[in-house]
Image (cartoon, rainbow, N blue to C red; front, top):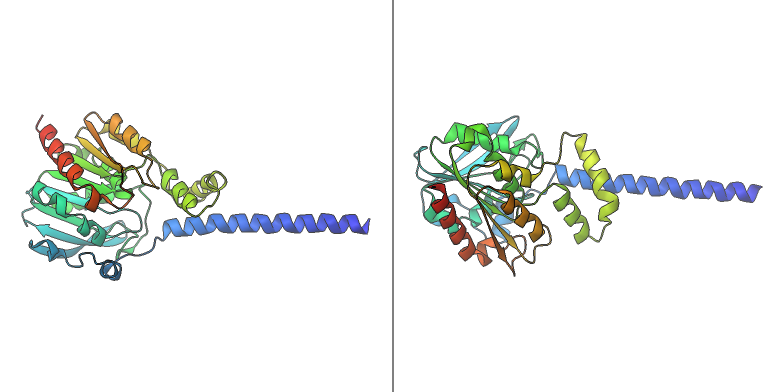
Length: 296
């Protein structure tokens, strides 16, 4: 009897320990999602990336945009006229305006003015944290309303790509957005969360759902990028990489297919961050396609 009780007690202890470990793992994923690593000036210098907004030889200014408790640094490059065609360039998860700055080269001949913000919770932004795409489209809207009056080109990578597509559907931006260039957009938040788990050899199926449920307690919710693309009126050009461990090409292709005017390009050898080096031809072609279809 004593031996049976000991066995039962040991089993209960093991079960409790396993439950605590599981809960702790989920909590760690949630914390990492809500507080991404800050990759600002030091990160850019360490990787040999452009560290000054004047790196492309154009006039540049720096200022801060405030939105819903967030204070977000912004690089403004090129023409100062707010009525000029302006490209708002959005970085991905755990990146910053410095990452967007490194991707600017292929865009320079397609807009007169460029606005590169740190999204809330990223880079050097202060105040409220990231919502992982839940409301960052409203951040883009507030940025555009405050600092632009002319046509807009929305450009984004990964998280920024999904935000750009959602932003293009907002009533105040719908008529002003000439097009969206989406680099490695994903369908739902479960995609990058699952990819990060895969890259760490952690069980995707067991952890994604509880992680999304826990994020829901912080107001984070999944939204369909494909549904947003279907609502958009402007041309949407999607580019993805065949070797991307985060964004499955099938998801990116489905997003392009859902758009009323969509194009899709696959760069076979590109991973998630390779577009500014391996996809310059595809980016130039996509921007030319946007320009052509925006006039129709």
